Length: 242
Image 1 (cartoon, rainbow, N blue to C red):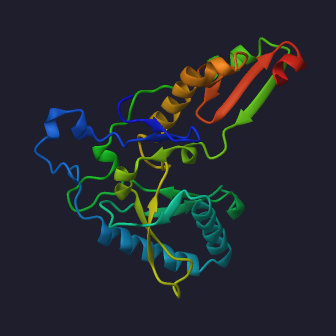
Image 2: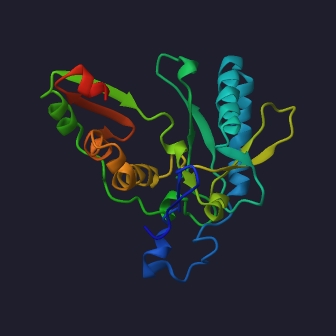
């Protein structure tokens, strides 16, 4: 409540929940680094390993480039305006059938560096806020009609405040022939242990702040959403569509 804000468009902007801000146990740590050591060299080594892997698989390389280009075009990452304090290694995962069109880039915030601490080690995970999936499914099946929806790029709809983005830096270049660049991730990052809590907590706050504008949908984000998936029902098509 103290560190979250909304911009002129209504978009949420949250802070990274560092443990030393909530506990006296780590007060001796450097407050500027939150106890994190040098991560640049290992993140750079892992990027070069990734680059070699991509150079051996043109289809995978093209899919990875497309993912990162979209990330940049949407403004979810920008060229780093200042040196990073933590560098997150990244790699690709895709379905077991090898379909690279379903590629997802994973940001490894659990990677341990010089102090034997990762970014996830120094972040609070947060409370479990999602409703049990079984409750959602049973509740919607009590109605004649069912609607399902998905919140597109849910984590990346929520900004990280500017002073915390120095802990979300990555290395990237489209090919070994291009100059290596340092980028800053501007939104909640998939791979941070605090990401589910921060995102779902924003949904709850959105319902609390703006739900009265949409009385038929009031409570949907808190009772019918399982992370980014929404399942709800109604007894008429008209009511469900409204």
